[in-house]
Amino acid sequence: METGPIVKLGRYEVRDKIAAGGMATVYKAVQTGVGGFRSQVALKLLHPHLANEDSYRRMFHEEARIGALLEHRCLLKVLDFGDEEGIYFIVTEYFPSLSLEELVTKTRRVPLAEALFVLCEAAEGLEALHQARDIEGKKRLGLIHRDVSPQNVLVGTDGRVKLIDYGIVKRADPTEKTRAGIVKGKVRYMSPEQAAGGMVDIRSDLFSLGVVFLRCVTGEKPHGSGDTGELLASVRTGKDIARLLAAASLPAPVSALLDRMLSQDPAGRPSTAGEVAVEARKLLNDTAPGYEVHAFRAWLDKSKATRRPPRRKGKTEVVKEPEPSQAPRPLPAATGIHPRWVFMGLLALFLAALLAYLADLFFGRGG
Image (cartoon, rainbow, N blue to C red; front, side, top):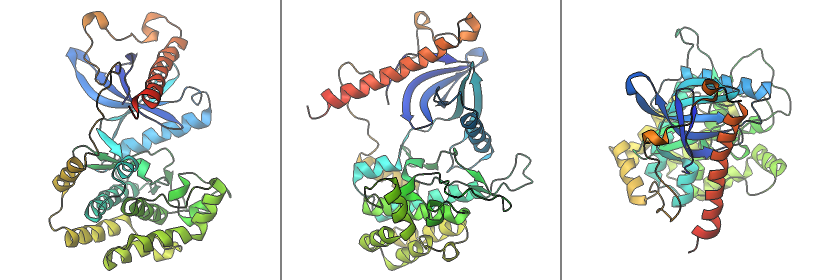
C-alpha cells in the first residue's frame, strides 16, 4: 500500500493507494459526517481519461448499481456511488486483504485443505451473485460474473474470502445475442465458450472457478505465456487444463468434482455454484474435519503471506489522522477552484505511488 497526500472528494478523504487496474484505482479512504462521524471505507476511482467516455461511465455506474444489490459475506459490499466535478468513484467496505493471485505467488502453491476452503467460499459468493434479485426482492436478475479469476478473489487478513469486481457482470437475457468475437475477462480463466465469444451462462463462471482452483493447487498459470491469440486458442482446446488437472494429483473425489467443473461442454458441468459449494464443503470436511475460517486464518499467519513488508527509510507506511494545521484539502467546488485541480490532486497521488514503487524497485530489492 502506497501513501500520499489527502484529497477530499465530497464527504470522503482519499488516503492510501491500495491497488490499480486498467479501469480504476482503489484507495483507502475515510467517510466523514456530522458530529465528527468517521468510518473507514475504500474508494474505487475511474481513471480520469476514461471518465470522458460515455461507455466507460455507464459501465462504471452499472458496476456500482449491481454491487449495491449484492448482500453476502463472500461478496464485497458496495456502499455508495459518487461524481464530484467529473471524478467518478465507487465506495465499498474496507477489507484488509490480498488477492488470491498474490497469495499463490507468495506461497507458490496452496495446500489442498486451504484451496478447498477458498473454493467453498468463492462458490458461495458466486451462488449469491447468481441468485441476486432487484431491490424489492421480486425479480431475479440472472447475473453472470464473467471475470472469476485469482485477481478477483480477495483473501482477508482475518481469514474471510470475498469475490470482487462487478465491472463486467452481465445480466442474463435469453433474447440477447452476444456479438461474435467480443470477449471480456481474463483470458487464462475463461471458459471455452467465453473465449470463443459465444453465449455464456452461470456454468461459464463455474468453469473459471475450477481453473482458479487449479492455479491454487499447482501454482502454475494456465495456458503458458503466449500472446492473447495463443491464449484464446489454448482455452478453446482445453489441452492445458487437462495437463494441469493431471499434474495436480488430486484425490479421486476432488478430481471428480474438478472434472465436472472443467468440462468443455457446459452441459457436463454442475448446474449451480451452490451445488459446487455443497460438494466442496463435504470434500473439505473429508480432507480436514471441522476446517473453518479460524483454521484458514491460522494457516495464513503461519505462511506469513499477509505480513506487510518491513518499512524502509523515506517511505511512510501509515497515514496518521491529520492535525488541525494539516486539514485535508477542501472539495474544489466549495472553494471555487476549477475541477482540473481535483485532477491534479489525484495525479499527485498517482505520481507519489509511482515514485515510491520505482524507488522500491531499484533501491529496495536485493539490498
